[in-house]
Image 1: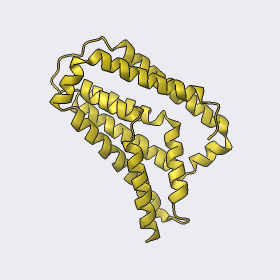
Image 2: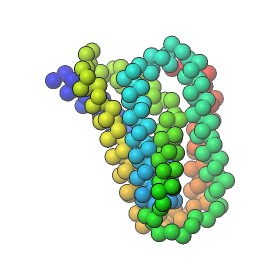
Image 3: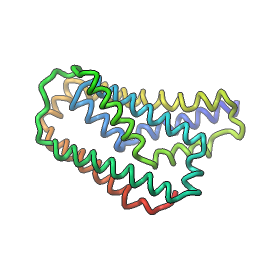
Image 4: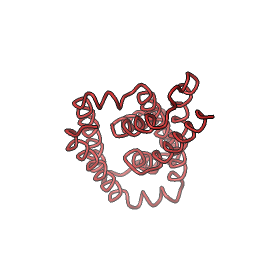
Length: 211
């Protein structure tokens, strides 16, 4: 019974964390509107993989590693910040570039794979996600979770992440949101690029802070 209550508390916290706005939400939203529904769903799967990876690392004690090796945390922050800054610059530079005129939902395997890979990188680029999972797990994990609990927890995190971002992809790839995006593409892309870039700069400038 204790394990069930602990699992419910952890998954509720993870769900709320996934739903909070940030670079991951921004990436899936923009991909769904700019590319296609399939690309948005591929990005959602990438976010799920990133969440799964951080959940596994959290169980293995990544937060404790960061706390004992603050230079490693700073290094991860620098790398993640540089990646987000790169994405922001790319979005800003491509803001005035027109999209091809494919109907929504038409995308090739290559673009879906790229969306998946970039989404995974976006999710993993934020070390604060690792600290979030590490903190939640440290606070709520039972003293002896057992093998089944340990195996199921990262899978449940994966399902939460991919489910939430799939909803985002399905909603924002619909005809209405896509039409709004296409009309205001330059402004929306510049805004998205600015937010991504600022988040990257924030991570880089905070790289000397410990966990």
